[in-house]
Image (cartoon, rainbow, N blue to C red; front, top):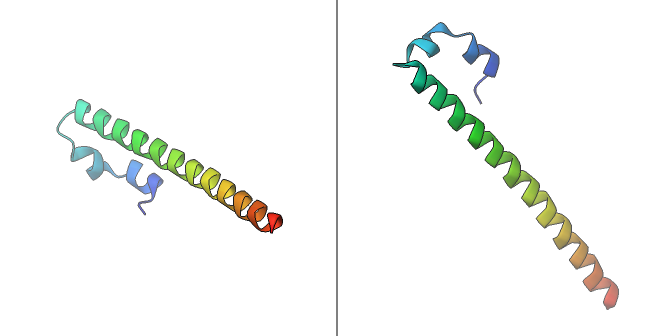
Length: 62
């Protein structure tokens, strides 16, 4: 994983973009991806919780 602080303090990183629009677009894309990852993790946790609950209720019925 890339260290965020190292990346933000790296002058060559900023020089690699042709314009301010490219840089803005890059950060918007990264922000969206981070949000999607968080949502995916939350859904997985909820899904696993309900599976666990259903398994416990299934075995209680027997």
